[in-house]
Length: 119
Picture 1 (cartoon, rainbow, N blue to C red):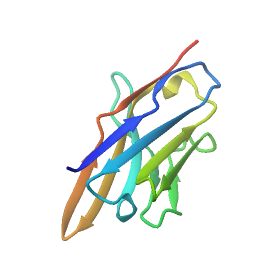
Picture 2: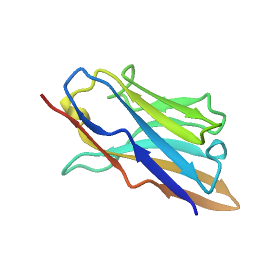
Picture 3: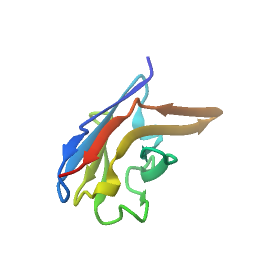
Picture 4: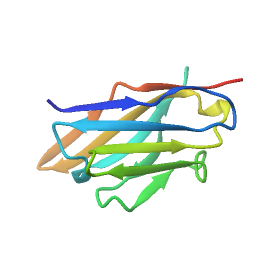
């Protein structure tokens, strides 16, 4: 069964850190472009960070550059999002996505994990 399961969300104070995990099953993440997205209440979902199939190339939204880091552990078939210097504006539900075009489009989403930054 193909599945993406996020974990690691929670409540953190401004300036704090969290590490989100996205564990894949039923397929191999290293064959996919994997990304983290977030959606705050009343806002559209936005792309936060991407790691490409080679595991080396990454991209970040301007709002998180220098604070967030995406990485992938092939042995664990898991992608991580290390979030530092968290701000209230980072409060959102964070979703993991894995996408690949190989004869057809494969596009998988996790169920999301809530991150709340508040005093």
